[in-house]
Amino acid sequence: MPGNVALVVAAGRGHRFRASTPKQYLPLAGLPLLRHSLNAFLSHPAIDAVAAVIAPEDRSLYDSAAAGLMLLPPIAGGATRQESVRCGLEALISREPSRVLIHDAARPFVDDATISRVLDALDESPAAITAIPVADTLKRGDGIRIAATVERKDLWRAQTPQGFHYRAILEAHRKAATEGNESTDDAMVAERAGMAVTLVMGNEDNFKVTTADDLNRAERMVRGALEIRTGLGFDAHRFAPGNRLWLCGLEIPFDKTLSGHSDADVGLHAATDAVLGAIGDGDIGVHFPPTDEKWRGAPSHKFLRYAAERVAARGGSIVNLDITLICEHPRIGPLREAMVARVAEILGVPQARVSVKATTTEGMGFTGRGEGIAAQAVAAVRLPIAK
Ligand code: MG
Image 1 (cartoon, rainbow, N blue to C red):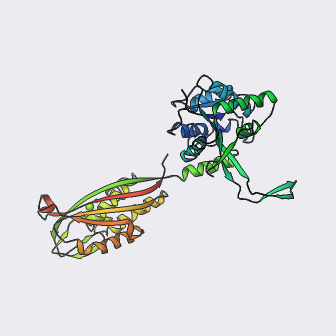
Image 2 (image 1 turned 120 degrees about the vertical axis):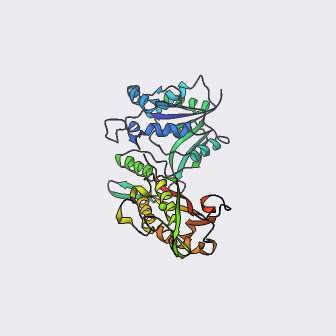
């Protein structure tokens, strides 16, 4: 069954890391680094199977890191990285994949596009690696003194995955083992065997976690990941005798008012619940109980402002807010622009992120009979991904 197999190399001891657990098993966002790397290949549609090469003494660490994942059995590695890769390649003999991608377990941020670029390059070349052109000026040091400036033109930093036609890299590794050549990556093994190796553009995020600082950087990157969440709000208030009412933060002359504990601004109440709903933070009644005298007659912009502050306190921001007012009267059309401007001002967002719409219910129901006004709102917020 020819296909594309990913070998994730996880047999290293991580001497540079100085932790008692090998770094590929240390947690990143609560999951072992290795699991992030395995998942990156498992979720790629062009990868048919994934196997890890591990140190036999790490078997229990591996079993918990890989629990529940659909992987080929783990392969016991050797004393060096090169030996481990060769063990991994030999273990695939009966499967005879057409291509193999070799990846360091300590690069948890490899992305779909990078994997695809390497695979695509293997259509034209027996070997292809992801790499990044060197942008910094390079110095050769003699101790702490500069001995020379190294021409950086044509220099690339090699990353993984490194992809190969399976038979060719297997033979290259066998040859290197026979000749006793040690290489620092698989591309070097291929080069020594005379294979043409193609460079494809890598991704700076696909860095190798080598030190404790790198792991902290990886944690910051995961924490910096954002998701969009949405919330829905609904409210209704009854008409009462009066000559003005509050709607979407505007005081509007009208032949009735809206009754309620606060200023009864039904539009802002629905909006407040939508924003609180998006961050899973209760509702307007939880934060501003109608039983509390403090909120009698309160201006509702305080409620919406508060909800926006709750979003900001979580490191989030409001993407957009869409309010629909449901009533026969007053007519909303002429007020709409001013309402959008006012709501945007309350939230502290550009007006383009706010929408106010209106509809009637064609005479049906409580709004149709003119008993009150209802409002719906949907809010989207951008929030750091919750663990
Ligand atoms: Mg209300």
